[in-house]
Length: 360
Image 1 (tube, helix red, strand yellow):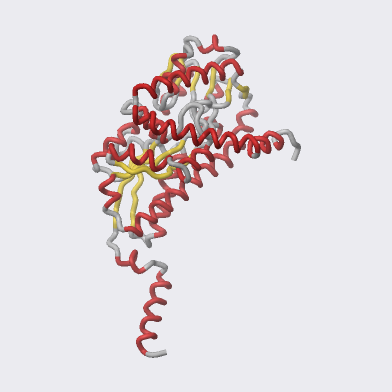
Image 2: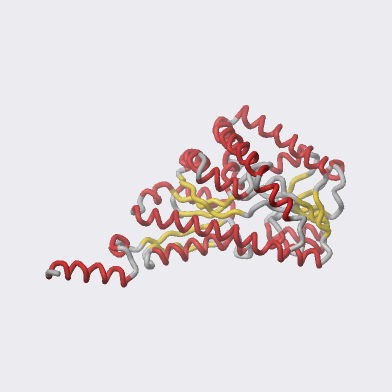
């Protein structure tokens, strides 16, 4: 080996020993801020931001620093879109269905009533047209979107009294999350309420609320709803999956070197997969604890599910007629979902149904 070969080999060995790719090693440190729509108490959802920050630092050798801030620390939970659009903060982690007041199309990035489950949402976003179509929409708000975690199918909430028929929803004051479910519940006779997470228990205890929808067993257990409203219903038909999004200001994204973009996308994918794994691992444990605390876990009556489905389809037909952006993406989503339901019927669903009846 000649002298020049030795020098080249030594240089490569030094880079490998440092554990940093040459291009990354040469980059200046980048510091971004992330404003979340979620509080730290929601450890699974808030954890997406923390994992994203940690992985970016690890992959870049500390060169890509992302400071993460819970809801209310930099901006209110529902103010995050505005500050990212303006570029005053580079990144947010949020559920886009919070922002249907701007455009109902936002909801399609998160999940809609009688929409995808978590695996189907991932398939549409990654292998279908989901991410492409949503990013065309988000570009009008100067943002680009990435995977930001999944909750899986949520529960249908806590009720003071049993829901035996559609009549039991009439006049029911229920706290609901974002998206289109409020409009649909209104068609069913309920009275949707929008109350911040920290105020829900007190409102339920005082009787200001008759019912509350939150997320699922792991998160619900912490808030103690079962102490006041013992009837716990499933499934949360309005959230077959709640898909979180990481939204980045378009100009900030464009300024990143290619290798940092690859790191960011990879870190988002890792954090998203971890979030769903946490929910799948933690929810069964919490559900057993809730049952031990005498929560009455019940399925919604078929008549209520059917009425909800009918009302939902009426809302979507109206949106198709008046919102072109919604109509384009919704049509693609439903076409993809039809194929997904066909496949799941033959394999996944049948297998799950059978295993649910076995003693292990």
